[in-house]
Amino acid sequence: MTFRLETDGPIATMTIDRPAKRNALSYEMWSALPGLMARVRDDDAVRVLVVRGGEHFSAGADISEFGTLRSGAEGAARYGEAVHAGARSITALGKPTIAAVTGFCIGGGCEVALACDLRVAAADARFGITPAKLGIVYGFASTKQLVDVVGPAWAKQILFAGEILDAATALRIGLVNEVHPPDALDARVEELAGTIASRAQVSVRGAKRIVERITDGGDEDDAVRALYDEAVHSAEYAEGVAAFLEKRPPRFPVFKTPSAG
Image 1 (cartoon, one colour):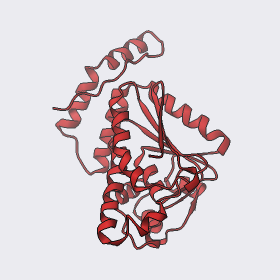
Image 2 (tube, helix red, strand yellow):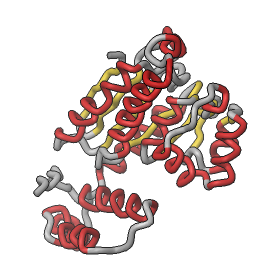
Image 3 (cartoon, one colour):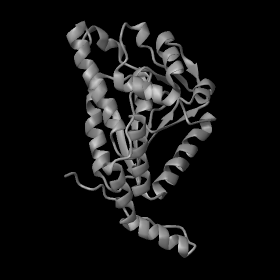
Image 4 (tube, helix red, strand yellow):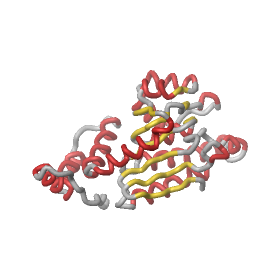
């Protein structure tokens, strides 16, 4: 497995760590993602996950596996299932995620970045989704994430042409939230992650679930109204109100995800 998962207080960082291959993602790496996300999910002290690379975020799929694990329709389908499960595990994490994008963010690398809630990029980063160069149809869930982020017209151009976009274009079309000079990227990601980690997590995670419901075409229902009820009965709400009345910064307690069932 060529990921590193490290925790510093309320912020976990998952680093794609395969520099010799420009952080190309292998079948093994895609298959490891659900387990890594489970570790982040189950650690109540972690409030935000940052996903990053090194010189490059990820240059995409490991080309060497096209002639082995991805050869033939059956192998390609099995590989696609691992990619879908890996990307879905990031999307479904339930905690806010930030992709810190450097260098190449191509193909599967862009799929990982789009699975995150926010994308903050270095000014020299480059983006592309290139299945049209390989005879692959991009998966439904990942295509929907792309459409949700950039809209249908730009999603079509990105997928039809398979061109590489610079960071300025990515910012203009909404593919990334922010662009910063390369030497300022880490500081900004750390600042943003710290700010989100300092907020009431019952609010942050409730907002994440409601935004996802809206983009999935859902309406307000009992499950959404339960989020409101959970918030006003939480220790975080009590602390937030007390801090406001006492004119001091809030000190939110650790948020524990309610158990299912």
